[in-house]
Length: 143
Image (cartoon, rainbow, N blue to C red; front, side, top):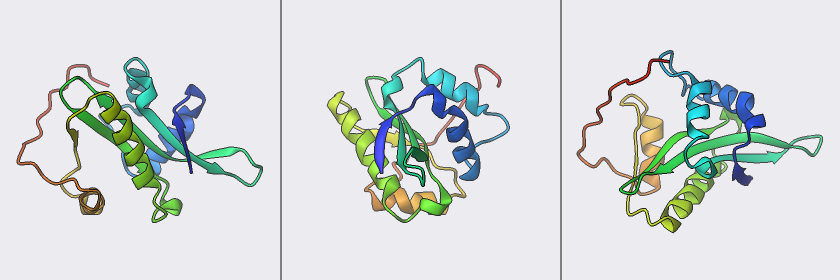
């Protein structure tokens, strides 16, 4: 798998990937999430691609990362269901962690839905652990 920064031409493929992975929710417009990310550290929005039958790259993974000067964040990690178990998620996380560390990021945070035990096991295998924080949110702009 090759990892590169997201390009606008990846939009529909990435949204379909997120939907296939169960990451979208009715209250979050994935197109708006992409547009918002492209205004802040777009280089930290990664896609993973493999060669398709015709030799062109086919996006099979994504990861949106960010750093606000205190903590790094990982969002929208997705690997196409047919390509899981090949280490693609690990590669995307490792690349994002490297990029964040190069920015001086001392700690990376992420959120996992409480019922997503498969994702929790995956992140625990990478060294992530619950840190005793409670995630809270407030919608500022409705989608």
